[in-house]
Amino acid sequence: MSYYHLDAASGVFVSPDVPSQPKIKTWRWLLVSCSVLFAVAMTATAIKVLAGVEQATVALPGVAASNNLQAPGPQVQSAFVDEGAEPSQMQRELEAWIKNKPSSWAFYVQSVDENEPRASIHENKQFQMASIYKLFLLKPLASKIPAEAWGNSSITDRTYLDCVQAMISVSNNPCAEAIASKLGWTSIHKQTQSDGYKSTSLNSIEKFNSSVADTGLLLDRLFHGDGYDAKTKSIALEALAKRKGAEAIRRACTECSVYNKTGDLNGNKHDAAIVEKNGKVYIVVIFSSGATWPQLTEAAKIISSNL
Image (cartoon, rainbow, N blue to C red; front, side, top):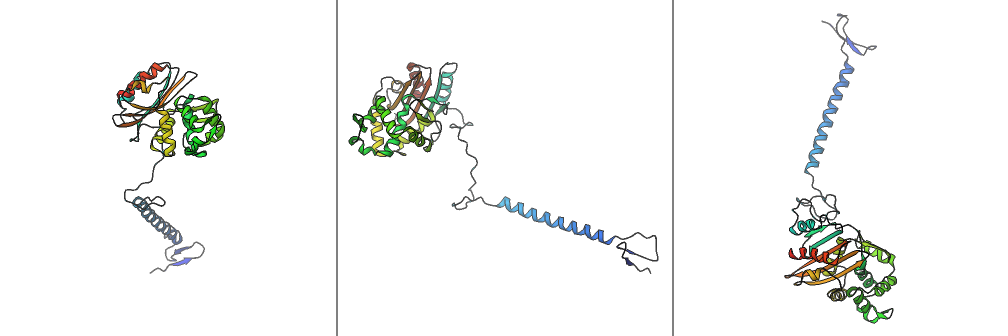
């Protein structure tokens, strides 16, 4: 029988009886065994963690967990119309109508009871606002001077009530400029940005731009009283209901009730309205550059026939 002993120099077991026998490197085998066991343990832990992640429920702060609740994905703000949805008949007709026209156009048509517009073409394109900017003076003015007091407060030689009615119904420029000067262009611009009108710029009387989408949003909010008290809304709608010297939407839809504001400056012609037809209410906004009022009326007829 052979007896093994540990050789201190080499760290292996050797037998004095068999000099040529292979050396058993014990410490190396121990190291390999420990490494394998550690790897197995780590793999098992990782599998448990991944399984737990797949079964976890996503909970929003302050909202009770639910089996159907999912974290919201990134918000896309540039598209008003679902790009995957079939274009409406109105959308197709308007796109065909403006094709090859040298003038620039933008349209926004939406029911006040729906989230998505019926038609939306170049909805965020900025145009010079012309007198449409006067609509954006209503909320800042009502915030500074309550509409209930407009009839008892004067600006220039008229009351605020007279001036508001004049700048909306007949687009009186001196009244609008006096109100804007009283409020301050910087304050007006900050109000529009705070209200989310990202395509609207009202820095001074020489520079004011907006889009059909922003104008449509303002009219929708006015109709719903969102940010406008009942008195301000009543005064505005009364002025918007009056006929304008040059307009398109009212001319195109004689069976409609139209509450509109127009603009005409430096080749920019616009018509923005709250339209009631067959018991339903719509927001209709048409902006153009280089077009004529008959052309705007023609476009408005396409919209009217599809309401």
